[in-house]
Image 1 (spheres, rainbow, N blue to C red):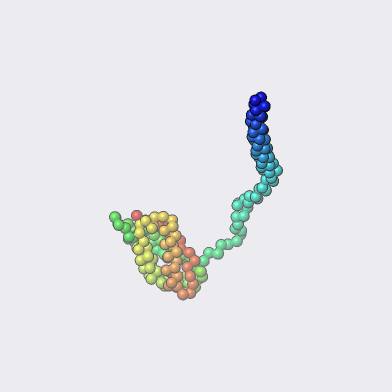
Image 2 (image 1 turned 135 degrees about the horizontal axis):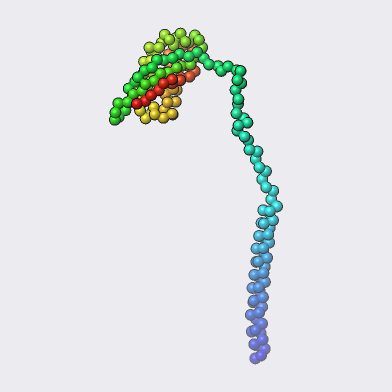
Length: 169
């Protein structure tokens, strides 16, 4: 009987040795993996910093002595136009200056001034109060005016339209 007790006592010991060996092995694997990851991250070279470019260094500076290429200009007298509005009457009071490509077209613009004023009045009269309130609407109007006036001209073109006075009420 004593022999049986001895065998029973030894059996649990061999099972606990297996568990202990398994735990120690898993711990060793985890430590090695953690150490390897830490070594990899520590020894990894830091990325080279990208050169930050100063945008101020690349801004073109115009030559003070160089004259700007400004074409001939024609003023269009002040006009008042009713615009589209739903609730109350609104109007635009404006005057323009158009910059032209060459001197020859200046005479043509002066001859066609009534035709151009009519087109401008019709174009602005079809705009809404909301369209003419913001910057984008005004830029759109300038583009449409340039296109419309250029459709009349044969000897040159309009380079730009400048609002010298523009009131929306």
